[in-house]
Length: 500
Image (tube, rainbow, N blue to C red; front, top):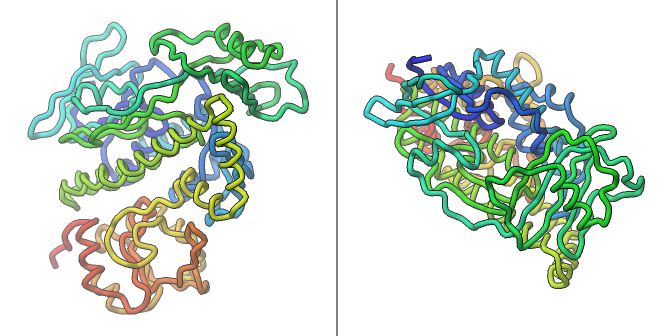
């Protein structure tokens, strides 16, 4: 497989697959390698939040995922229930779908776009030079293979080989507890069982993802297992007995694994031609189902930027904004999952804290704040400009266009930026002509008086807005567009204007 390519992606999980799709939509050559010989079949993470559903909708593939999962009206913060209905999104409810299904559907989409997963291809060496990155791969009992690429992206998990070989630090906090997780049958589970229980020494939960099968998680504190010690069905069964006093007839395990509450984040998401995304860039307690979602959103933030640089449309400095924007998001995820881990610890003091914290959830503002944080809907990047939409993800509103009605997200199907003029100002389109080769110029009308954004804010419909391929607003104007600001934003995010 010795060859040259634009990008090598190490790791064919949700993050790597999503990044491969984003790059292929932009016409970039991709080689996706995975150290495993095949999919493990392990279900892993169990849901997609609103912002990830929006991203999939922006690319026109959401229906595939909705058909494979179930929408649920509730979510939680450390087991304290939140009402997700009423979020400022066309897709407010979390989708219960197993990671194994997410990976299957993303891999099918990637195949549609011409991406093949190269199995049994683990990264064993990295050498950077002026031309890019040389990536050495080795499979089981095979001679090493070298790929030459302009960029290498490590999406290879919390124990990322790419991160280690690149010498990127991974600071953070060590684990203080051990949790076991498995998909099993529980024939003796009472019909009135509520999904989670707190116990004097920890907690346990059982969630039905399909008839007869349960996702069981046990958490025990102040004991940390060796990371390399295999997790077994018997360990999961004994842990449940210690916590619940019974194993509820546990039998027929599909898989068993272990995790903890270690929280670490890569010191830099980019080092030369090597970048990190997903668990390779950040690990944390899997509270609130944020890990997979954060990784997919990393990929969508990085993909268009990497493609723009490779195609010569934007300077390489654009890649620095990937670290600036997503490191801050990852840092916040680590902080809120640390807080959730603290709220799960057993003991009278934590019980009192949970009671006080739970009493605050009756207030809409508290619910809204936590929902926005867990779902990623409230993320706002620092893109400059004073308009309240600047840096936020764009609402998916209905638009009236000369050829009929469309939604904003339908404009983003091709993963290209969109300049949306709602004012009919000739200056907007005239100014943007120098970027028409890489930015879709769209004139439309909105019959709405206001658009809703998180924090329950009503924003008057803007006169014009520039939308990045990841769905975040790079520039917006409330009334008469500031043409100089538009020109600056176009050049900042999408490179210099084409010369006539």
